[in-house]
Image (cartoon, rainbow, N blue to C red):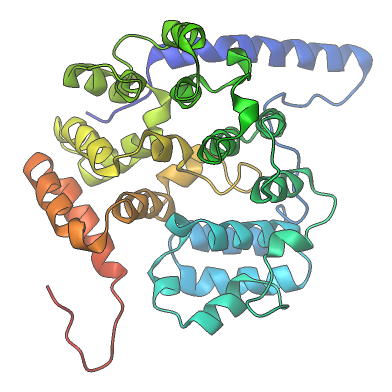
Length: 345
């Protein structure tokens, strides 16, 4: 049976839906245009037919057709194409085999703006676009925790979580006193690491029993708790979408889910996998697409060294044969083809 988010997640959405309805009624009463409180602001160029066509090709995993079309649009000033190319250039899991087989100079010319020794990220060429400004701010070392709220306000929850992960990796001192209400509840353990006893106790009180964060906070957890969380939490959506496609038979998708989480080997990674930007393509559409699911598999593969990949795939094979087959096929797609040399099995 295909997996789906829990009813509990739907209940958490009710307050937001209530606020949205209130905003709509207020707008009608005042004669103002109604707007979704959760909808990202429009991105210049995103509604252009040529961009939508290129985006559709990319989501279908046709990089050979999509990326040159996006590059042409970016050169003409399309901000949406520039943002998408900048994200693909920055995030390895968004890069497919077409890019993997491409010589470096051609790759740079395709993904970046001209300038300097290695080109310039297109994100530096986007002016007066809030979501691009926020991503650009994250790339700088002086990014601050306030950027998480900025991304949330722009309707970019994945970017907000990415910001928290990046700042934790930088050991940003601003996280030490960050109000817990301002932190993503799925990533509270990042604050626990540098907290004193009192703050650790407060954090622990907010993390439900059986949550995978408990293990990351030094506690023993039961495999059944992890399995329950993976089946119920909206945070597991990238793995749920992948397993529903690779392992559609009854029971197999559930086995795939636990094997995928273990193979990924990073709670941070699971929370930050997904759409390059909600302003470009929403998370559900991205995760359901061939490119989205390939990016999830690619992220799993990138989490293991080439030397350890065979061992990881063998371990997955013992848990979920359909997941192992999908990961092996994705790894094969990225093998560099050298003329005259037969690839090693």
